[in-house]
Length: 91
Length: 97
Image (cartoon, rainbow over all chains, first blue to last red; front, side):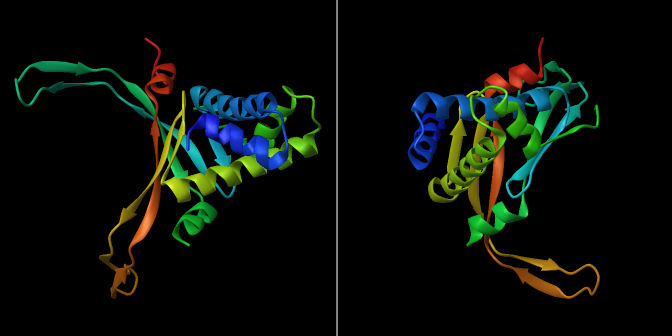
């Protein structure tokens, strides 16, 4: 399923106009993204939690050519599925 | 790290401010949305949210493990796990030049 199918599903399940369902799904995603961009944690009970891990930059080497490459510091989000989601997936 | 945590109630508030609906209605909708997301991850083994990332479920084989407390070896059953892979767009937003 992709985002537009998610929107369509929500609209049908709750008898909403697709535009409204679209606003809701987009705001949902936006709120999570904003929190993560601010380095905040996100915790959605029953679904899972997100947190940002920060990695320092380093100089590495291309193992094939031996060239020195600089890897810039980066931030990546990590998702931990919640208990309910884990159990649901394995049912 | 600011140490703050965004919870479901905060997400409901955020959506509430952008819609014509009351909080209780928004909460029901968010719960429903999460339900659809879970079902999609289970049914399709994947849920793609463009501009954000992809939730994928994949199979882990059974493996031998050990209870570190009793030192008994046990077989961990095969199971499915869910991972999140972020989209290129979101990765760029997290790491501005």
